Image (tube, rainbow, N blue to C red; front, side):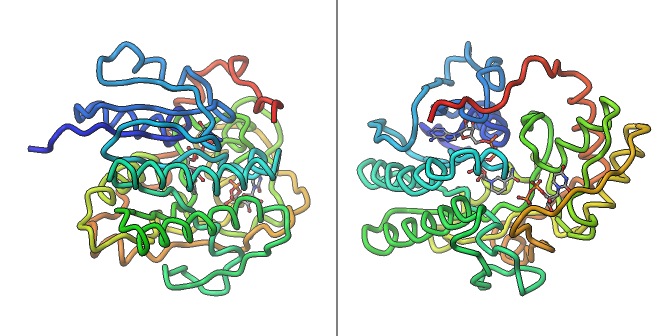
Amino acid sequence: MTSIKRILVTGGAGFLGSHLCERLVQASHDVICLDNFFTSQKSNVAHLLDLPNFELIRHDITSPIWLEVDEIYNLACPAAPGHYQYNPIKTIKTSVLGAINVLGMAKRCRAKVLQASTSEVYGDPEEHPQTESYRGNVNPIGPRACYDEGKRAAETLFMDYHRMNKVAIRIVRIFNTYGPRMHPYDGRVVSNFIRQALVGNDISLFGDGSQTRSFCYRDDLVSAIIAMMGAPNDFVGPVNIGNPKEFTIRELAEMVIELTGSKSKLVFAPLPADDPTRRRPDISLAKEHLGWEPETPLREGLLKTIDWFHSINLGHYRPPTPNF
Ligand code: NAD
Ligand code: UDP
């Protein structure tokens, strides 16, 4: 039997955060969802608001907050390139000050704290597939650096609080994850292609579409991060979490067209600066230490995501709030 814990999820109203909150609430934990709604909206967690074991706080994690908790999942950070490049200074502050604030809280409360890091710490990788020991190839002064270097600095802070202050930490490096409740205008490739296919717009392929990504369905991802939080204390990570099946972006576009039955055409646009040419996780560590591997094939996950896109009213979603 698992004991009931008080758990903070920063970025808890976002795409992954809202699913994580749902799973933790279902497991009877006492969940505090903290979010400033920069890239999300209250509707993602509206169905949880009346539950006695769920609480929503509007707060920006760049400012300290005093809460008493047993565990913290630190997900607060814009994740889509368009969102994190919208205000790059705010993005790096969110990663760095956010990490300092949750680590300070964890130290004070003796809580366990998990950092949602990213495959972006590997930059445009020269090692393929990427293992956790690979140190990466990040451009520190490019347009993606606010996110990549922010997440790298957060990992540094997590390891230093762990070594110096004995804070119980966990670090997961998340590879491209998709599913229902992605923001339809976040500009990420899965949401863009599905939205474009459903409304009959052209599908925008950046570059020649030969760059690769490995797509993980959100349910698999959430299972992995919960497993990582529960891992023995001598396994703090970083650990890669993702689906090792690799696709070109062109293959993804063709699959979306096939599954939606859309008549949309592929159009080519310039590749954004520093766009990684390939990405695939080596998940040996996750298999060995967490007994985890993804179960959902891309076609199955895409069909569920397409169903969800069919069910929403695009008029209810707006671009990120320009208030920073
Ligand atoms: P998301 O944009 O849907 O969620 C991020 C949430 O954080 C949003 O609800 C946003 O409003 C909130 N937020 C942003 N800045 C904040 C701040 N200063 N204070 C409080 N809340 C703030 O994105 P997501 O895909 O759910 O990503 C969640 C986490 O997982 C992020 O940390 C992201 O870097 C990481 N991650 C995601 C992926 C992926 O493929 N989805 C890949 C790698 C890493
Ligand atoms: N991409 C694309 N068309 C789009 C959006 C993205 O071709 O409309 C490409 C993008 O250039 C990148 C890949 O798809 O090579 C994944 O992009 P995304 O923004 O989803 O995530 P990233 O992995 O780059 O952070």
